[in-house]
Length: 381
Image 1 (cartoon, rainbow, N blue to C red):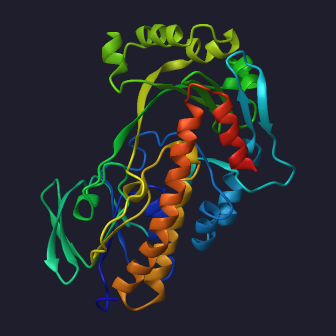
Image 2 (cartoon, rainbow, N blue to C red):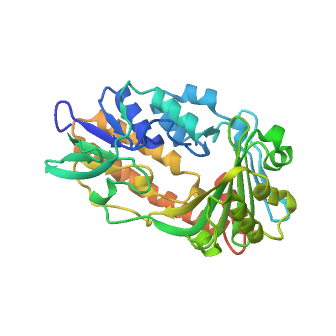
Image 3 (cartoon, rainbow, N blue to C red):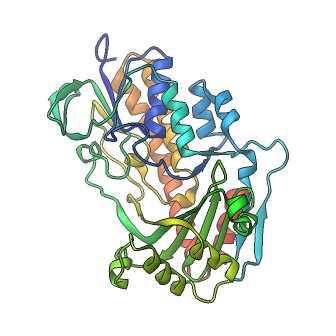
């Protein structure tokens, strides 16, 4: 390390940043995590994740948390169904008994598992990084929105798509992919929405046709999360003359866009609980690289934001975090450790991002669902 007791900051308390912090602490390396959210429960953490054996689960093993993860995971959630717009099943993957290659876990439960594993006061909530100032010798002064500053030997940007750390390493910014997700949800689905529950099954369901898709996934406690996906302008709501907060107006626009689809699928747009949330998809250029800069590095979406059609975003973020932490704990030269991590991470991320871009192009495509079928076969071959 560059000093006897290096000061390491992780910016961002997502799965990747928290995995990095846990593995560092498990190896006796002190670290502080800064996150702009007011608390761990300030907002919903989103849907469910399938953690892969060789990436996300490998990171949890390095963190000493695999047994706890297994107790929370849903192996049955590995089921995947692909339908066309007539609700005809074209592909189904059903996990074999004992299959634990890609079990599902809610993002919120995974985050809580990681947070509970950290030493008290590791995460400083309500700390929004404003900027970083180089101090020389790889050290940087972090300035936060509340005005306080701290100096660190290493700052790890785990702060997602709109990272405040990334601009010191790269001029790249996320671009709109041309695809938007509109999120909806069903509560207590097995009892209150049994037809939807049967349609979705135990895992996830995709229905695709002509540049549009309906994607539904089981979450824990009976919740089903739905993403209404389509190619079009990022300003689709404005162009349609509606506000996303106007649930019935948005519903009418979406039902019109999916006119002609089977009524069982249209129920995903018609009968949801609560409103809709707009989720345009962004991605970083592929490959996204930078010139190594002492005292700084990135992991997860800050380094390789990609479409969710890779199925690898959170998995790679956690693998990044675990590998970076082990590199830092395993040798005395901090800069050499970061260089070694980046040499492995950057080409791996580029390969995954290329796969994600192909997956998005195939899934939300003029020839869908045939492109989706190719993509699913590639994922489960």
